[in-house]
Length: 365
Image (cartoon, rainbow, N blue to C red):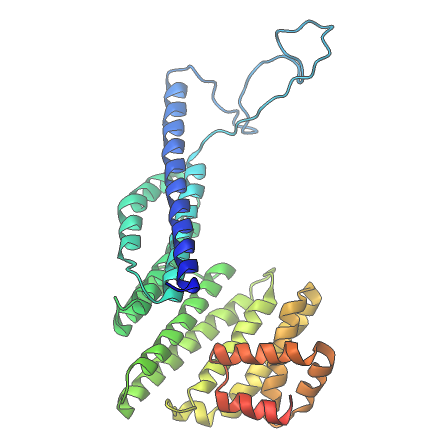
């Protein structure tokens, strides 16, 4: 087994250990909450003060041990133990859901394993408990978003490990985001949906690469599908960018630029999507605008690394359109190696073709 496989196995084991620890913690918290409620019911525990959430109690003055005399100057430490509530249980359950999501992402990166146990764990161990905890909680929407992320990650892992085909993957996305889930005012929820749509595009591209000798009508069907999901991602990111008070807007605009570049890539072989080819100039200009906006927001927020990334991507789109001076300027300000690294990342992320990277290197780098 090579070092990368060993690293993935080690990470998986760590996540599974974390999951077990959270589960043990949840069991202890459930016991403590039940015990606390029983004590309140039989009057052996003083209930919490409704006005400030503290326990009503009468005790010795702070810092004074009840067993010492007034002349004793020794300090006494007080320990405050916060009461276990249903919100506490929800926090732990959410941590488990997020750990399961991280395991799904690890399976995608590895391209092997069976995510079926993750779905079973969520359904059999967490689902009923969470429904119970939510009975008197206001956190329904928060839980829905966390569960939506897990469901999409499960579908992604299922596809990349060979347990789901692309049609079933798309159906899973439709089930999550095509139902009653309201994302209207949720910055995080809208960004999550955009990420899920972008991951689906990557899966569809992987399907094209896996299958040799696809008929052109099949390629076109996948082109239409990918364009649709990338357009959905753009719609979600546009809505997220309009939410007042949203933070780290540079990330949103970077993703908007990436989506336009992904759509542009549909014009390249073997896709040769006619709509993408005819929209080439518009897509490049849009991407440049979004990357430029990301660079400005990152500069304002002090995010230097993201500012550099956005600036290089903006310059790359200008160079493809025939304006290479921006790349030359960014090479001077950021350094050749830094620019080359970001261009290489764009190639790895499938934002640029090898032919385009070669053209950029020959003409500008």
